[in-house]
Image (cartoon, rainbow, N blue to C red; front, side, top):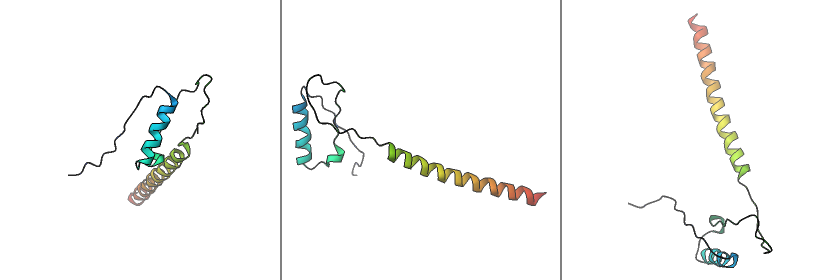
Length: 90
């Protein structure tokens, strides 16, 4: 049986350069760049570092809106059917 669970690996590196080297090695070995993340402190002192700040808020909002619409539609349909059933019983 094949194990299809997603796995995560964490590493702590003493310098930004060593973390950068590791990320480059992972990408070169076949990991998609989108599957590799690096967490760094906000204040690195006098060190310069190019970072890209991104968020998954748009994806979360879209997923929430979609699930809300589906759930709302299902509840609305159920309420409508219940109302029609009660009206036919009277």
